[in-house]
Length: 476
Image (cartoon, rainbow, N blue to C red; front, side, top):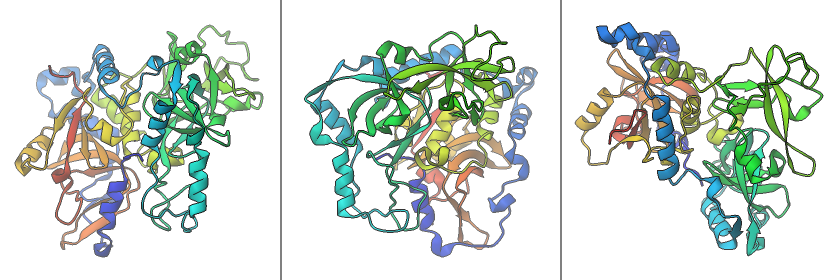
């Protein structure tokens, strides 16, 4: 089962329940030391310029390039070569053995030892469990099967088992669905490894994840078409938190389709602008090509419109502090979505989608992100002193990613004696002036200081830092 961010945070926060305090704190919205101005990306860009030297200020510190396009290309090449959580679909064998498929299934699907509960608080029965496991069809895996390729046609959940049954560790605590792994987006390529017994699910590998996806969201095509999609010279990159294709009754499969930050779609640059697309003239829109699934399950590519008013770009953005702040703050206040539930995202999804808008590839989960050998990593162990940790925090730079068990935060900068982070978090806690630990149900993309944040009554977030990952040209 996936090690997403958030669960550890909820468990830590829950331990403070008995000490929860309802008194106002010295911060906006009861978040310790927060001010309304801190909730605007421009505030942090201006701090960059204030803190820069005279020479840097001429070039505007907030607009300095943190990683060039060639640096990013080199980092992505390292990511694909060195990080075992990233899968090269083109390199998979043309024929899959039973042992390979079974090993991938077993690595994903482990039923928790403790009881699971449904949304109405009922224990998942032994019969339900047996039916779900049987639907995975492990006994029916062929000795060998030809590898198939497909494109995802709609934002779709990736699941631990081939079921949309939501299951939870505690009755009434229905935000953390234990079968929710992640999500895939329109245009994502997958390799199809296996099919469920009921024929409604595919077991797939994408570049960043292996899991179950509903069959209705995948169009199966030939390898060249699938892996070549998105490679054309001209494309649009989604730079908003989410954008939607234009509504069209003529082609419902690409009507009001959600595209999340960093998704890249081919541009049909030669389309005559006076020629309608799905019943609408194209002059005020971008004509893009999107994958759809035919009734027989096969893949087709069709034109669709993204209005020019939607937040997209002709290329990936330049990685500067200003752009980084602007992109991260587009998610501010969005509800926390464990494993990309709720059509939103969790902490590792948040940082990887912000960085995806700059063309940067990252692993999906915090556990893999934190130790990725492709990034400029600073590792900590339990033996590292408080002084060493505080020195590292003092030296944090914009965009640095700070990992504690089960969670990741993105660094904004230093102000008023604190290091400020933006992160997609289920909870958080800190001490009130009277010494009680205050539990905050933040449950969304939030701005908090790092130094006062507590993981328990005795351990701070800083005490729990496992890794810092820095988006800079890697030092040899």
